[in-house]
Amino acid sequence: MSETGQAQLPPRGGPGLPQVRRLVTAIPGPRSVELAKRRSQAVARGVGETLPVYVAAAGGGVLVDVDGNSLIDFGSGIAVVSVGNAADAVVENVREQAGLFTHTCFMVTPYEGYVTVCEELARLTPGRHEKRSALFNSGAEAVENAVKIARAHTGRSAVVAFAHAYHGRTNLTMALTAKSMPYKHHFGPFAPEIYRMPMAYPYRWPGGPAACGEQAAAQVVETIATEIGAENVAALVIEPIQGEGGFIVPGTGFLTRLAEFCAQTGIVFVADEVQTGFARTGDMFACEHEGIVPDLIVTAKGIAGGLPLAAVTGRAGIMDSPHVGGLGGTYGGNPVACAAALGAIATIERGDLTARARHIERIAMPRLLALRDRYPFIGDVRGRGAMLALELVADPTEGTPPNQPAPAPAPDRMVTVAAAAEAHRRGLVLLTAGTWGNVLRLLPPLVIPDNLLLEGLDILDEVFADIARHRPRPRLQPQPQPQPDSLPPTH
Ligand SMILES: Cc1ncc(COP(=O)(O)O)c(C=O)c1O
View (cartoon, rainbow, N blue to C red):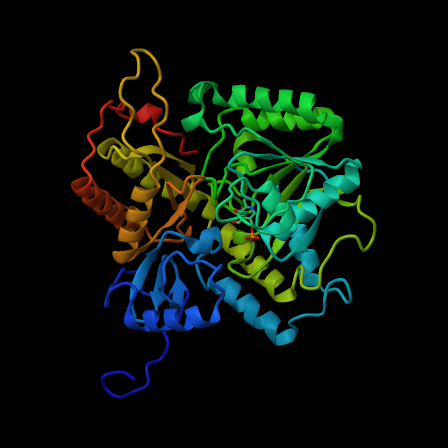
């Protein structure tokens, strides 16, 4: 009840929500704390959470919690609500479809929305060849199906995955995922015939960032040829920018060399664009940045404005390899989720959200680079579009011989955890990532207003200033100052 004794209406979500940060209680507030207590008695412990504020409404660049706090959203529900939470066209389509029918099962009695989403995927994904799609419920399920399709097409069983990769939490996708804790620990045995290759991780590549792409690709090609045999490999599965691994943008030339090798050897090149897809990186798909046309592309997250939908899209000759009835699932391509996807796609195109993602990079990247130069525990700044990250590290190592590149300093998970927690207390929803848990990642909705984006970046600065005050760590080796022409490209 409000002070006047009237029942309070829940706030309406969507783009009409006031785009302000406003804290009226401590974070989390009392109602969230109450809900957290209920949660502990009802929800399995294994389901984690980043920030225990319970959401009542969301839209644009804010989340409003049950205590009335309005938080800046730098997470987009892990890169899902790129079009903004409760985006108008998504909500309208969902309402209309839910009032018509909510489910028939596309494999029993089909409906138009599924077909239209597949047509849209053929239109939007890289390459003008003939394509087919199949729809699923989650990124992991779609990745699994991409592997099934590649195996059916090639008659081969081996699958190549990469260090720092994340592809999901089902058995096969756990096997493809690199990181043990928390994703795989105690959950084995895992699916066989998965082979892990080095990732072209410029910041940590022993030969330095400039040589990284070429050297890493040479290692991968050599290892596949000598240790697996290319003729045994069905698929190479790769994120064009690694997500959970820490927004690792592969060294230049890495992806193109791998795609070329796959084309030469008949390996199906599978781009997992679950996190990078649908305008997030400033192109509709991250592969486009390097002119790569994958054989199969896996999408989810940003595809449907928050409803569960995922897809595998690819060359007709590969996609049509599995026998009739070999692909599917009860809910895959649910009509409400398909309607939401058509609303999300229309929102991306009408609002030119790829350009918005590049705009976000243009605003945020110089600020993040300036932070790196100010704070010694920021080792690397990277990413593309509205998928940007800071890798936090311990002090740079002393005693590097003159003229030798210093090895990348040790990851610092504790400072990362402290920074994220402090950001949360100040009303900024910020996610972590990375093999060592030492990456802060920025994934704002693409519709976030500039003033909120800038305020979120100011909060980051305040958080780092606090950390620097409490953990003074002088930079031993000055970093080169970024020159305007040495900034990462902003498209
Ligand atoms: C690159 C990538 N692939 C697959 C997945 C799994 O998607 P889902 O959580 O929808 O199963 C994720 C989720 O974060 C992802 O980032």
